[in-house]
Length: 131
Image 1 (cartoon, rainbow, N blue to C red):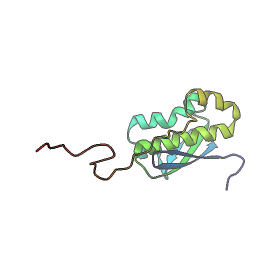
Image 2 (image 1 turned 180 degrees about the vertical axis):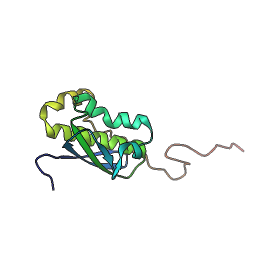
Image 3 (image 1 turned 120 degrees about the horizontal axis):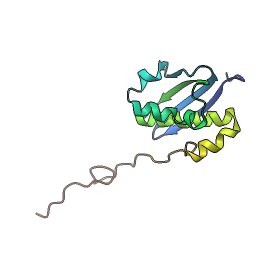
Image 4 (image 1 turned 30 degrees about the horizontal axis):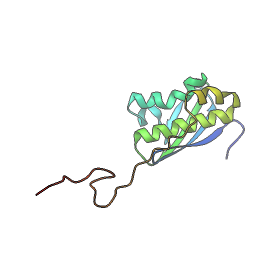
């Protein structure tokens, strides 16, 4: 499925997983078959996804197609960002240094903490009553 002119990578964040494909093109971005502008309505998420392209200066040179599942909007944007960064390293190993220095190749390990029995949430307790 992968040809010489496309670069595939996987990114994860929280409970979201993204499969990202980069191809030489004019800078089109699509997520789950929709334009990125229609998928991510918040401008901050657009900036988050574009960060790897800005760090390497390749924003207008490659089209991006992403398939993302799970999590919320922020987690999905973070997963796509990591996938793009990994694909850019596959594309050209010289992209590793600027991406690494911008912190874009490190997977954010933070996950949701499980709820414990006897508590209202992961750490929140029910109100203490002395009497």
